[in-house]
Image 1 (tube, rainbow, N blue to C red):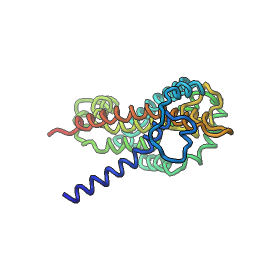
Image 2 (cartoon, rainbow, N blue to C red; image 1 turned 90 degrees about the vertical axis):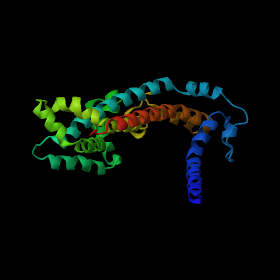
Image 3 (cartoon, helix red, strand yellow; image 1 turned 45 degrees about the vertical axis):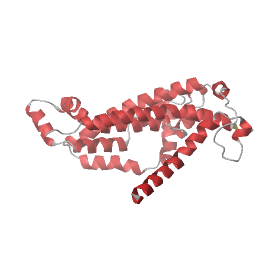
Image 4 (cartoon, rainbow, N blue to C red; image 1 turned 180 degrees about the vertical axis):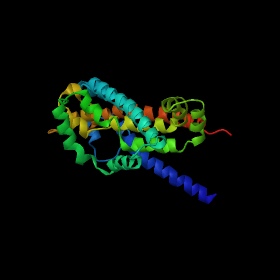
Length: 270
């Protein structure tokens, strides 16, 4: 009993320590600037400033920023899901010369830091004439090694009897992939889509490098509007951060439910 109470207290302390910065961000969004800059960590504002949200959207074209972020995020997610699905199945089920070497090279790219490829990727974008365009924000992230690895492992976990039975019935690789294998690896596919969208939506450095016009900016770059030579408008920055984080929170709960349903429904029945 004492051990369980200690465990609950430890978990509650960890949850409180994790949650407090988010609560402080949300409540600071409703404070005045002097109150937000107060060194004491006062959680609740003295008077709720609801007009901060209106002032936030007036300070920058966040409607356009959100449109760009969602457009790029959804396209990248769809492309990453398709590419990882096809490549993962090929590495797991197709027999071809050099498969192990090619898969090793794909995994090796995970060891290369993003900063090492930033300048070469930017030079390629300029040569292609994609600067300040959607392809510059989308194309470099349409495939990644981690998603391919995750899907390959998911396909490797499927019993080979499924493929053998489908092959006897005259089912080819593409039909087997779409009709049989994909529903069985849906939890991994949901995870790939979730990671792809979050990585694209939360990206800052790359959109900042390949865009310079407000019409092509994304929400993460838009947060920099509230930091300038005159200082940081902390209350508006926290207000904008609260607005920006809401889609990711909603996506998390939606994807969590889908992931659990997919996991429960993808078990192998005897």
